Length: 175
Ligand SMILES: [Fe+2]
Ligand SMILES: [Fe+2]
Image (cartoon, rainbow, N blue to C red; front, side, top):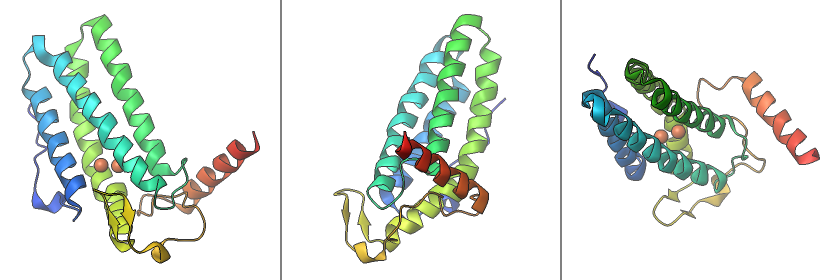
């Protein structure tokens, strides 16, 4: 099955570093899609490594612009990365490459939704704070909220999800 995930300008979020990373992510997923059986796991590992860098960078941007460390965007990154790693281990043991090819398709679908919701909200937030991704400088700190942000600011982030993230953060602090 071939992936239908392609970069298009509709995915651009107006933050060059983020857009470049997203372009690379899509290109690496395409390589998984087109990989021969022998190269499949190595190809997948390149996506995992890239996703680790990609998600870590966004998480760092969030932490330096007022997000709590347990905000729902960061949590989603952690869960997805964990699933990606687990699938690699399972496929290594079972040699069931169809599982990996299916996972790659699902990851592409997940990414489209994630980029257009959570990442789009983050890009908007960073731009409004005058954040420079290259230096990490927040040029408009007065635009940041006084309290830690627990939600991701996107339409997928319901008040319930924000409340749960907030309660989890409070519980962590009390431990
Ligand atoms: Fe992203
Ligand atoms: Fe993200």
